[in-house]
Image 1 (cartoon, rainbow, N blue to C red):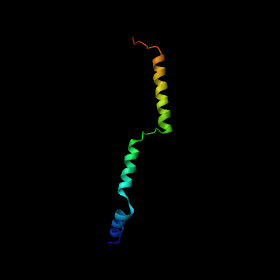
Image 2: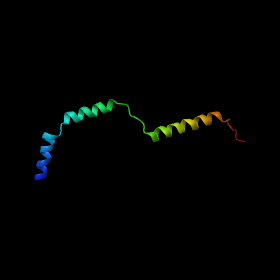
Image 3: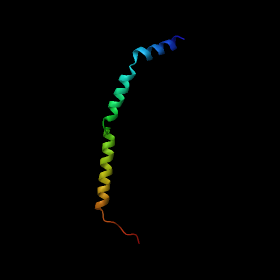
Image 4: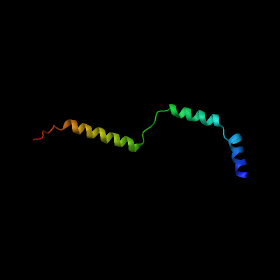
Length: 61
């Protein structure tokens, strides 16, 4: 019973739902940043595509 009362008090008086919702909406508008691993992976993919374009195409017999 005590934990239910504590939860109710925290939800009603401690947590400001409007502030949390505003923060979430603000973060939705920010562009997502890539991690260093994602950036490195993307660079490797671009390099691989460049190498594939530069190599002469081989014909199968």
